[in-house]
Length: 124
Image: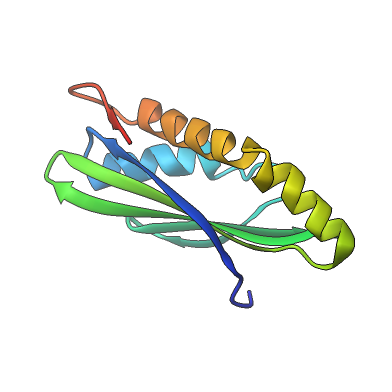
């Protein structure tokens, strides 16, 4: 996929090692949400969803950073282009209203909740 403009990044710290966190990412996102396809799956460090429709071309990247033997940070980056007038309106509705931010943070919490924990997650 072509290089897209950067939109944002969100992260959550998970009380699980990278292998268990990877399993949680693929369990939650491996059957891609509507409008996405798997773009890249490089275990246990990077999982990418990609897609396009008439108003947007997008890529949703999840990177798993090992913090220590029992903790992983999952970073979610969004890259997207919104071509034309309809794309500009769509961006205002999805990004400008904060719906995107809410959806990303909800997804990260679901990933953290799916990982086997010894303690609660430190949400950021």
